[in-house]
Length: 531
Image 1 (tube, helix red, strand yellow):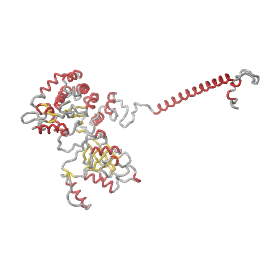
Image 2 (tube, one colour):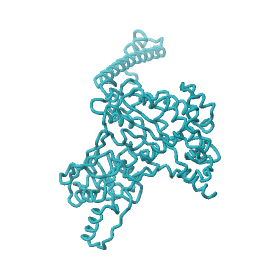
Image 3 (cartoon, rainbow, N blue to C red):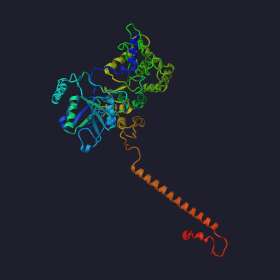
Image 4 (spheres, rainbow, N blue to C red):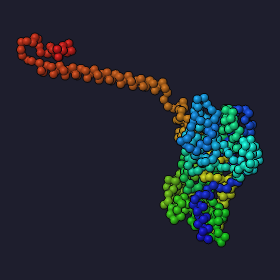
């Protein structure tokens, strides 16, 4: 029994359950197409899978020449831009911008993408080198190729499940998008650029579903999860400006303790302080320490509290300004080991965010509470929604049912939401702030975008070249005049000093010198002092 408890707790602590079970193929919102040559063009596009990292330009596309590295792109010091296919005259480097293709294997998907990004690629295509065991076309094609190569044997290694290009935990710095192309299609591309030396132009595009004039988006997170906290601090102003044009829903990811066997058959909690309701609802320990700090049970309790706050202060309009006030105040006041579950701190947050705390606490108890061995209706609903949605990682943002890839940032979410509006229904703030380097500042300044993501400035801000040039010339003229006047003054002062010195040391008596003793000094440079 003890080993069962420890093994279950270890699973939760290590975070292996962060990846929820999803037996269906990845929901792809993107499109992969070959534009050149026409012989490789497919009207329906190429089947592929997206990486769960990177920052795709939702609503946009990347269409560039593809270069096949001929390697697995695992060695960051071994990336040589003068190699690869198609071959170039004098082994010229890959001309930017470009898309790279590399072989699968030998290292993580994140490492390949990072190396491609450092090489200057706008996107990465990973060529799969294994067939799915259920893909007879791929298996037959591979067997035929082996026979042609003389390998023979009739046996082909395959894999049962589709590969998932998940983040290995270090992909926060990767911004370029990455696709996995299945073996049969990838082999055709490689043959075109390597064997024939042909040029292949590839297009990676992302279309956001836009069925109507209102965009629906939802965030799956948990109160102890750190990645989404900066976004949650910044989003209130944007949610306010988007208003009723969009509808937001925050979801709390809670583990099913019954399925995880934390809730024993005799009703006992086998996972100790990781769960509430005698092991029915659980969360990972944020600091991986069962003896100290915030517990999983406290995380579940705070998740239930936020569900109730949204129910009464955000569900009706989908904006939830008071909900965002609560999140902001909680992160500022109570987001620490000492105050996370402190009721006095939470009451203070209720007061600061103008939320009826008694109403929320009643909601928690009416749903089933967190203490007794009973079903909590609100937490059960969240577990069911997570299973139906197929949540893979935390945090995850869905926009019009499409999961956003890459880091969860304000700019990425804002651009995706704006791309989800039906044509002609996009709010004015989307036109003004889409593409800005700092969307939050743009929204706060009522659409004044000081700098675009590409580094340029818009016409309404900055200093023009003419103004800058005139200002520079004026400053040069002023300093030049001051310098000249200073030089004149210094020269006159030096002359007066020389004359004074000469007048002091010239002989006052004697008949050999004609005229006044100052005559020599007055002549200045007319007479030499050494000849």
